[in-house]
Image 1 (cartoon, rainbow, N blue to C red):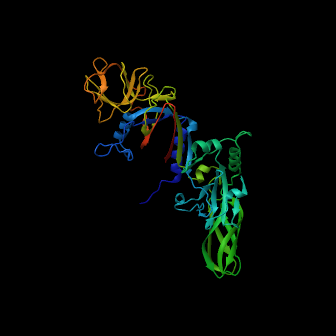
Image 2: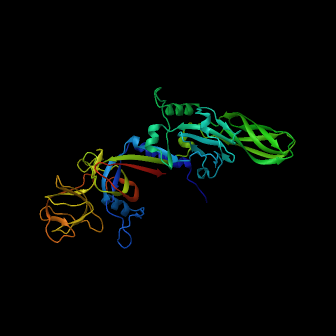
Image 3: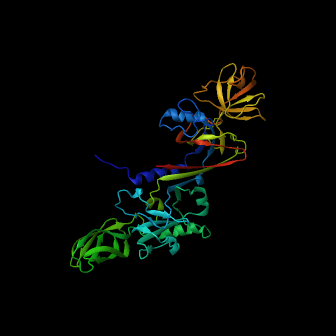
Amino acid sequence: MSAIITNKFRLDATERFVDSMSNDTYYLGLGRPHAWLDANGLADENNPDVPAENDYTTNTAWENMYAMKKIEGNDVIYATPRNLWVSGTSYGEYDDRDVNIEGKEYYVITDNNNVYICLQSAGTSTRNPDLTGVQTSGIIDNTSYDGYMWKYLYTVPVDTGSKFLTQSFIPVQYLTAQPDPGADTALLNQWAVQDSAVDGAIYNIKVSAVGTGYTSAPTLVVKGDGTGCTATATVSGGNISGVTIVNAGSGYTKATIEITGGSGSGGVVRPVIGPKGGFGADPRQELRTHYIAINKVFNGSENGDIPSVNDFRQIALVKNPVDASTTNVAATNAYNVTKSLVVSGGAFAADAEVIGTDTGSKAIVVEHDSVNGIVYYVQNEDTGFGVFNADNDLLRLSSATTGGQDITSVVAPKINHYSGDIVFLENRTPVSRGADQIETIRLVIAF
């Protein structure tokens, strides 16, 4: 027995996730301030641990996490792999029967951030589709130059590009309403493309068998559930060498092409039927956009809400975490996710291991706010998960044998650990943070 999960399923899952942003609350978490270790317990920062799909991994991520920031609706967009148009490159073409369409570069983005889908290809592309200029209806026929035919889909708006365009992915959006007349030209052009898209048009007819004995061009008759498609054949050396579309027609979901005349036999051609709604009606569909891109900016301490002087090696996407003070789903912009101790003086550097002299509880310092006397910390399997005691413990470095600072209060995290769901986790090499530094976190998640 054989089966597939269709692209429609993946697109639907992607759309449901994006739509859930308005119903659920997502936060981007930063964690793992301490070094990655090799099998011998030595620092190995170039080889982060590979996350496993189990509860241990997510539970450990909660213990490693020290900061999170809310993801807003404009921090998320659909995305698809980036194929840059480069002269001399061979591109694939859209084909409704292609069994590996996602394995081909059948669409491109140009240096002007215009996105085109290839309707017909032949060898290498040498004429930039931008030379024709933005064309919101019809096609760009470069077949007389390099054998390529393109359809303009949209232009990535400047602000969208600066936030989401990367070397590997391009942002994709579907416009649900007509933009205001004064909107970005890119949006106006995309709306024009969506509005003028032709459902079930046939822009390409492929030669499956060239036949033999043709002394003149045979007549082609398109038969199907649509209307208006007409085409002519070209003959060379007794064979059908190509087909030219005269009228693309509309409304086709199925079609065959009858070949008559020309004195030959054995020729077979088949139509390539455009997607439902037509090319450009919803670029998420024809670009098979089952990816989402997330862009979130962490600005220093976020006005004192999160630690800012340590590095991070782990990024988590957390759905519906719970605010410990309200017991409701978190709503504040940013949270410090660490446990903390209020201590009387001392100096505790980031990443230092500290110990409570009475309980023997150990922890790793994330940040020491010496002004307010607060030590923010995380714990892991190496330190154990002991609980500090504000009545008897003194806090000192694990390497010290005497002295310590009074612990006057033990404070629980502002977010309930293990609440909500960690739906994505990525381990990275260390990224440094600073109070006067801005980090832009970009993620792409495939569905």
